[in-house]
Amino acid sequence: DHNYTGKRVMTELIKVFVYGTLRKGFANHYFMQNRRNGVAHFITTGHTKDAFPLVVGTDASIPFMLPVKNQGKQVHGEVYEVDENVLSELDDLENHPTWYKRSKCDIITTQGATGIQVGDIVPCFAYFLTDFKESFLSQDFLSEYTLECNQAYLESDKRSLPCDVIIQSQRKMTRN
Image 1 (spheres, rainbow, N blue to C red):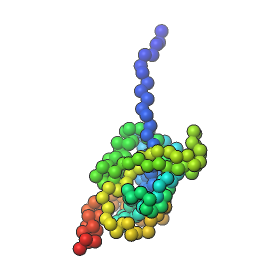
Image 2: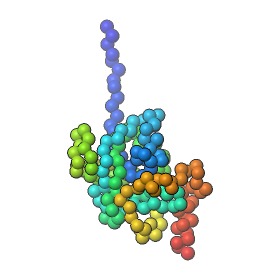
Image 3: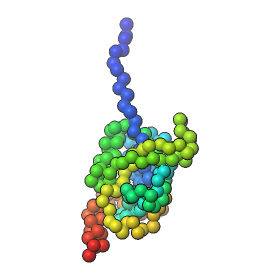
Image 4: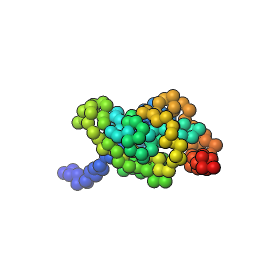
């Protein structure tokens, strides 16, 4: 008589689109692999249904997707399913909602997966830069943050100034 009466708690997984340093082979991908953060499963690759400006800002080579729909290009990246713990950790990492804002956007898949075909539209969360300098909109927009960009990426502990200080000082320079 070993009846198990415990209930298994199922947490709903949330789809997140990553387009920068969290992707496979990039500087912060370790974060998606760290099981202590919670559950994060790679699902597929894809690109945004709508065009958005993707720029590399600051001397630290940080990728920013700007919340300006139909400007820029379709942004390529990866789709993950994450649990609420990982989502919360991502919010902390991206400093949501102060630095980046987590918002819904549709992703068109470019690779098949279980229950997903190439060309399917998958609603995901993505992180958009909340407050950006106007000059970002006159930069060359990228469709993908490449490994070349990533090589110039400086992790936060190696930067001489925090990014918000860098951007605010650049913003002041462009206003003068």
